[in-house]
Length: 256
Image (cartoon, rainbow, N blue to C red; front, side, top):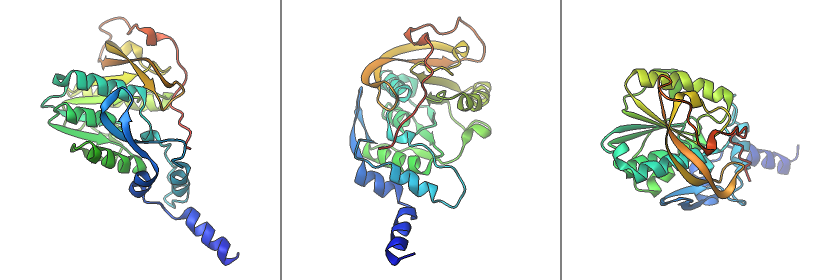
């Protein structure tokens, strides 16, 4: 192998610093439908594939995580909007942002007066983005870089779960954890645009909003999304809304 080829291979496989990459290649911009919050968001020239390629070269053996953190998903957006419009939901409470991604929901909770916000995110790139986003919005968020769904609930009063039912296996992993939260007296709110794996028989509709699902297949046009209370037993008929139609599309971002 020539020296030039060796150098090219080294540069391709060396691990990028996620925070430096995000600041250099992504745009800090207001979130559609949430002008109060700014996030580092993907754009056509952001080159996110380079971060995934760096993770592919990681010798840890862990599969690289899709860059969900680089997009404002509808479920998180609708939860954030709901919390900002009704700050009493989180005021003075300890809040867990489950599957935090960009930290959008946790940032909204902090801005709305939560006593403490814990953001759970397993993707190292997502953790870097979350820190940068929290700093850009002037809020303090405690980051948990572990899979909290495998153990007992953390010491919080409220779980905010945006876009956690985008795939069957993910939803099946979430349900026992959310049930443990309810058993511990922790309230759970779910935000979702009506995906196929949403457990509608366990949800009570609280509010609907028109928000863009800019990270999914819906484009930037506002579409109906909803906030639900996750309940232990079926205390009312399954949530009925314009979202009730089957929507098999999950979260499928394509890194630019």
